[in-house]
Amino acid sequence: MPFTLQHAVHSEIEIKKSRFLGCVEPMADREAALARIAALKAAHPAAAHVCWALMAGGHSAANDDGEPSGTAGRPMLEVLRHQQLEGVLASVVRYYGGVKLGAGGLVRAYTDSVASALEQAVRLPLIRQQQLQCLAPYPLEGRLRRLLQAADAQLLAVEHGTAVLLSFSIAESQCAALVASLNEACHGQLQWPDCDR
Image 1 (cartoon, rainbow, N blue to C red):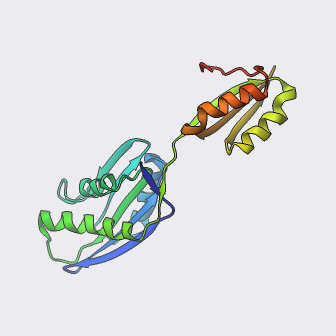
Image 2 (image 1 turned 120 degrees about the vertical axis):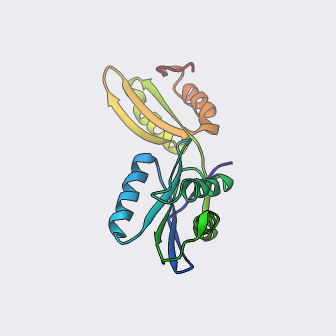
Image 3 (image 1 turned 90 degrees about the vertical axis):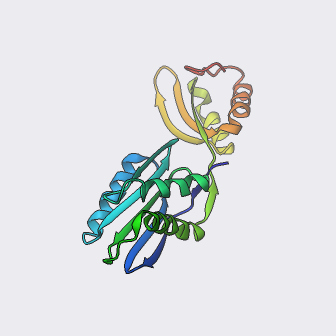
């Protein structure tokens, strides 16, 4: 089962006078991650490197930011994979201390920075959501809203046209049961666009 993080957690380690400021944090997608990295670079203009790794939306990315290829971003990404994390950005800001660490030393420093932050992190099981839409006659809108709320579905949008179009999301594991219960409660008057329901 994949996990995400409850909130951002930071670490700081020093190796041969170089400071490594690590952070692991929940992150929705690559666009948000790039904005966060840009903010880190602006906040640490004297840093030698701001390396990062991202697991989000089934996609991964890693960046060595000038460190020798494969010594920072990729090892950090492997830590996230090994911990089965999803929707998480790992970043490490390095202030160079004047002593070269070598490729092996860099790999250890970056993985240790991420691992140290993860030791303090609160992991949450990642519950995959499914988005659905249903068309309902106007008189059923109130009932549907109450049923969705009772089922802990998240109402995303409501459009009023010739009928009411409700868009919502629910945990994948509860999807089939919710659709069946909505169909039963609304006596077969619901339509499910683009869906075999």
